Length: 196
Image 1: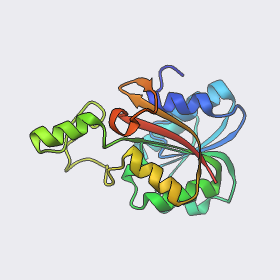
Image 2: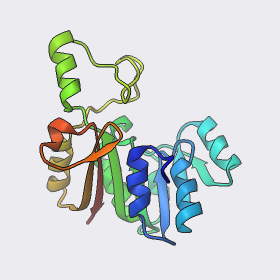
Image 3: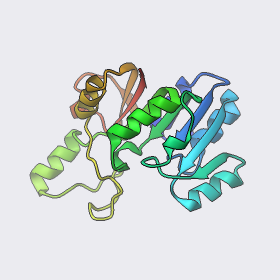
């Protein structure tokens, strides 16, 4: 699991063995393959990009092409132990409704996202007056899929407003985990484990 992106490694380390998982926005299937191979997880995927779907299928993964905003309604209530949305929340049209759907189809949900309140993002806006291009946000504002610039504080407020339980929270700076102290300022990425 060490070859996984850091947020995916956190998720993989905290998914119970032999559970049923739906990975929404599964990309190339790296997380699903790791869960299948190291935790005997029954992993299914939903992915928008047809090239990623083809790559997943070539790896022997069960993935269908679909959109988190519109296609989660086809899944049954409580059909999965975990629903996972990694680095996808900020690309959805209605993150609040997608979150509802995740916790309808999964008993628990992992959500990871880039924190747009990280100090480097703030400094770039302050000093240069432009949306930053960084290692973790590598494309210009006009070509980014990120349409909702969420922060750790924004996400915590949404979770509280929905009455959800935070079962776990992990914060990353670069590729390293950091404490939750001043996470809205210090964390580049956040991972939350939620339940109703």
